[in-house]
Length: 510
Ligand code: NOJ
Image 1 (cartoon, rainbow, N blue to C red):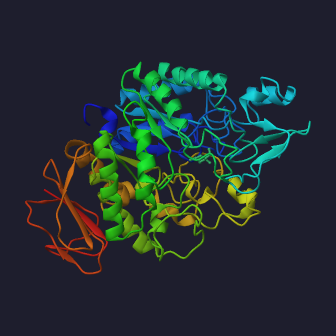
Image 2 (spheres, protein in one colour; image 1 turned 90 degrees about the horizontal axis):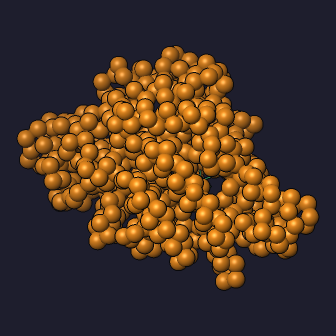
Image 3 (cartoon, rainbow, N blue to C red; image 1 turned 90 degrees about the vertical axis):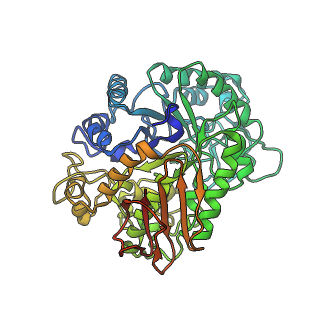
């Protein structure tokens, strides 16, 4: 790993509810995660990013935070979280946690205080209360304003249980400074900033999305960066979803965030020209800023990569989630393997969403009554939402709960995941899990932060060499391609045909 750990890190995303259940209640927790730390160390990742672990009514999977300085009892205790951080550090694993500054939970002390207080009171000024509702729409569907018993309305860009903070209020700034310190003081190495671009609102401009990427948001992150810099090597990672690369890059200016998720790459179709454009554009925006790019194939908000890459339309679009669209999973699996080698070879950091290393597909057939994502309820059951990529992991055994824990998992696991368990894949040399293990191990010494040099083999082939001499070739065309001159084959996502690389296959050469 490079000296500055985060510049080339492989970061594993733990969706705690679905990772491993230590107490048999069907929901993943810290006890489960701690028992599986050896798995993560073995996998060869450098850091873990955990989705929110705070007390929460779980109206949005924990992104409705009731208390930023404690742990959800279903997940464990603050003491366990502190022990977990130390244990992870002992294994050389850094910890990134999620902080949600745009909104809190209606169950938070502040919001409860606001409800009990008068209109116009200081307690209400921490949120957006007004006498008449505005016309903005919630990102989860339906109106973004909800009425309280005394007749006032409050803003929630997401679910009604997630009231937005008023970032013109200095108390809100002070609160989050304190929250950052709280966790940095406990050894957390980084903060993933949820919905980072929407904190500042402009109600008067007439824009129905007058909350996206307003200039004033940068002042917040400059102050957060000053705070982070008081500590040793702590990082700020932005969740910044919008296509304008120039605006995106502004979050990574010196004195602002260290890195941000590269959603352009995630959303890109499995097509050579589009992927090359996305990679080049990413490098062009990041290099002048001295910020390392990140490469993201999936997360807890989008359809699993195996399913996406097996569809006729392989790009990702939040507005058109393509839920339930037919997918050729064999093709998707093959492409996902190649994509993993591509993402892990590129300069910068890489994110791996739990289960990606197992090649899990999206679960499309979760019964409606078991779905928990507010997208499902807020869309009057027309958008299935994100539960399909959040199904508890299969660890071992022949039937559900596949070693996830003793109890019935909070979302049902497909029966045929028996062949996808960690146990089954550990024994199978050709498995996705063993591909990830091998790639992460090679990556530790030879890849990560730096630059690349393109090799122009064929328009439907992506090929580049890294400083260490490693060459990555990905064949996105339908015909096999001859490998460039090389010493040895380090790793391939599928079988080679002599010196030929088949379609939808990637190889690392030395
Ligand atoms: C982005 C998170 O990744 C997503 O899961 C959540 O629903 C929204 N932000 C709101 O917090």
